[in-house]
Length: 326
Image (cartoon, rainbow, N blue to C red):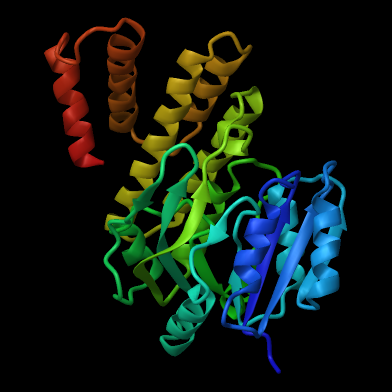
């Protein structure tokens, strides 16, 4: 019997949540699955929990490695996976119903999709459904999807054809910590058939000790720099005007994220120099650099000096113009 879905779960010190994650996968009505659990050097009881579950269900495969990060763990799972499709949940999240994988597999396989995305629920301190602006049940290529989507950077609300991943020799960049921001554009740009489901299928847990809520460090700045450089490389190679605009907007967004962080974390040595190095090495025009400088002034006015956005009308209008252009 062929394996329809490989579920790849990177695991690091999640003993409080791991059982709920595994239980939600094991009760799925699609039984032709493998569950590849990569224990990324956990120091709590996560490995013991995995071993207990593996004894009870032969579909669970445990891979052990020294702590190398989520990208390395996912790569280990991708190299091992044998399923027709790949699903990569986080180990502190869970599926909302027993038919999630069967729905994803049936939809993706019948429509021969490279990537299928879906909506999710935020759980934790506050609970709410996140409904993407992506149009549901429409098949497009990856670039068309990116131009009308707002949910690109999460790996866990996507379902991937393994043959497609293999065809583009896809692996995560293990050198950076914002791995999804760098990897997902590469995945979509090369995809021929992409679609989105409006169903809310996944519970994304927000918690204080997750990677997303850890204190900012210089490593975060370097990681964002790598994401910006990756987008800039794609921008230089892209012939399509509309998609070049999309990539430029992404570059702008990440660049201002770094600038904002550099202002609010000025005590970290070298952050200003790092920001300027990133900006000056981009393949942007003089107009781009002028508009970026204008936005920097706007951010200083409003966020650092606490002034109204209308304090300098010229700077405000140029910022509005930049947002229209890109």
